[in-house]
Image 1: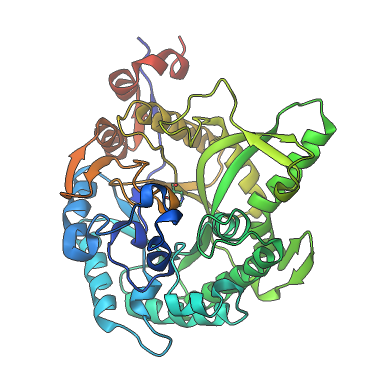
Image 2: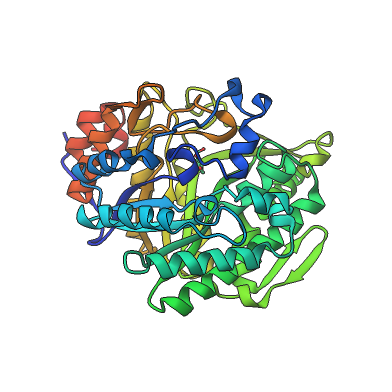
Length: 442
Ligand code: IFM
């Protein structure tokens, strides 16, 4: 059997990513909490409830799990609706609680990456129109200043906004996230304001903490034309990929948001990016369909040959991870994989998915492409938004009723890779013998 090791650079960040609303529980001042109260909004009428009970203190045991599995970093988010429950009220106790969590990471030798906006808005902002409101960016800047001042002792790696592209698509085009709209004009207003918000937050972070590194995390979807010979499939693929993948990072590169309904100059956004966060999960085949005007005439589906996750939500397409970096190079900043993972309650596919995606990262690094870290989505099963509790992304399984955790085999696999800073042939032979030949051909 071939013996080989795919090593990662010294200082590579290895961790898991989480988001406040999905793990803390009882975020009663968030727009998501209000949205959940209508049982039609979430699959099976589910609720986040206690989630992983981090607000009740279970972050301690989960950080222990992460640290004991050799993770040297953790990405978490700060819940705006807790810090600023009303426009004129700051909750200092909540800030203390986050300070304690960050000290907890420091004590365990883990580098924090802190996200300032991960889908959840304070209810008061949502009632004023959320990110459609022209003042939203200024509100976000105020919140950012408060948080950065309070937490700068512990954090210098900031993610301003998580997946602005997914947030806009789900909330304003597909209508499955709050506020449940299907309105392209509103979506474009939100894109513009999110870009303004990102720029304002980036500049505020640097004013307070010049040495900080800040960037947004994009949900990158790899897309390829279904029929390579079809110009229409190419055209629609390019239109969808521009709107979904390119619009935000291009806006930050150029200082202009370019939409189908016109361009908006945001000069302060230009260059407001120290790294690009890449959240990569899967790849679509795209074809032209005249009957889908609402989706820019694009129909997306998975390659029929691809392995699918348990609810068929994701296809295992590791090459798309490589595409993401190749595409990301144009922005001339380091890249960090801020999310990647698989919903898989039985841990049937996750080991393979994880190793194959990490292998693509290793390949990219071997081209000298600047990929600096990897955050697995996620540490412990958590609340999956409109999909409720139907999808299990955790390295640890969670029973939300009893709060019991159980380690999945992938947690050990990932721990070995984090510990070795490498994917060894032993790890592949132990956890995914079925892909050994493919990874280490004789
Ligand atoms: O759980 C989400 C996360 O909040 C954002 N990115 C995708 C994940 C998996 O669906």
